[in-house]
Image (cartoon, rainbow, N blue to C red; front, side, top):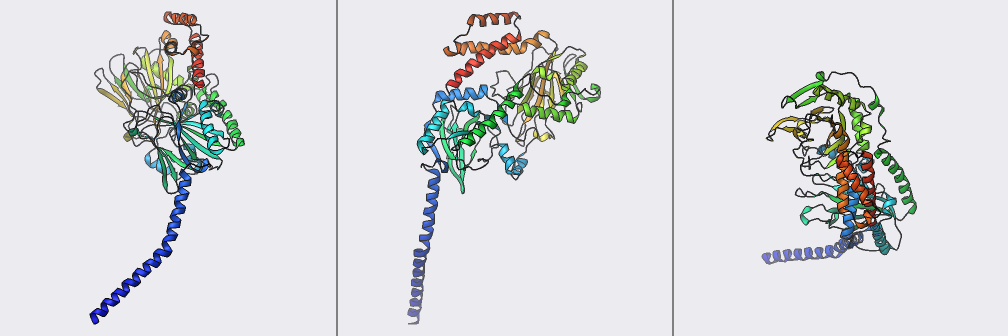
Length: 543
């Protein structure tokens, strides 16, 4: 009986336990179930198709046609300018990058979500067939008219550190539209568009060529970089549209002002030079600043100078390059240095600066001769993902020099980025470490290569390069030679529309004058501009 009674008590306990579980399940679970239903409904409303496009994410079945993508890429690459936005000329380590996220929102927004951006003027994009397609898709989904508020192309290359991004002000009237511009993109190239909600990643979109994605302006997004195996940059057209016409008008008005300033910076005749560039050069003895000389033979060598320019002048040079650096996407030729991003500067602007006077003095000290003039002035930007190659800058080693100004502050040995020189057997003979304000001068026929920065640097390695020659014919015809090559390419590739009203005989006569050395630079530039304008119009009609 005692044993039996014990079993009865245990049985009663189990029954009570089961009854309590039943009560718990019958009262608590419906509450949990209702909350789960509410969450599912909220999430579904966020990512599904409905009439309120500003509260959802949608991947459209409709895509931009391949032919239009081709023309869009040509227009962005040839006629718009890329802006690099990663802490500009100071090295930017991963630690600094992470710490910067603790800064104020304005700074984060200014950094952009990608290192590379191209602004597409609203008044131009409004005339494109691409905008007509996008706006028609919006109208069909909402029954409302949307207006342009911002248009830009974002470029992301492997190893780029991209940030999450959203509207500076999460305006409920606004919507993002993403168009993947690459004409060819494989699954293993990565580069997904991630759209984030409150609980993490809501949606991941593969960059299929021509694919269109709509998303609320309240959505946070991030464009992931390509894989390490990919040599291509991912390009995404990011369009912000609004229901509020007055906001669009304000954006366009603000942008027009920016565009005028932009044109002014690009104009060869209107570039404003810092006053410090026009000051007299302080007297200096090059020999007192020479820290290393390496001679290959009696006529060629490498010279390294430190502390020639005051830090204030170097800083002004850095700021000037920041304000005026505009990069056109450049596919390097075979046998070149393979530097992808180069920003050129007008010679007639450069020769007015005291930096040119310092350059002249250094070259005279090395060569013992005068009469050198610049024929190529540019800023080279190299990042960790770049693959620079061994090359020479010219074929007239005795009569030509390259002068390199190093522009990165506080550069450490572990950041790499050296300029490495080689003998004729491609054996390394010297490596110059970047140092703020350092100047390297060498015969431009010496084999050399600019090494990319290490993975510790999220920014870029910068040098300001000046190439000089005593050959008068070469000084005046180098740019002409490049322009003539472009003209010949136009003649070979131009469409019938582009060739309408072109006096082909006159162009051929000009090319004959070039071959004889009797054509002026102005004649060649006018001819080139004519072809460029026609190509630009033809491309624009197709986007």
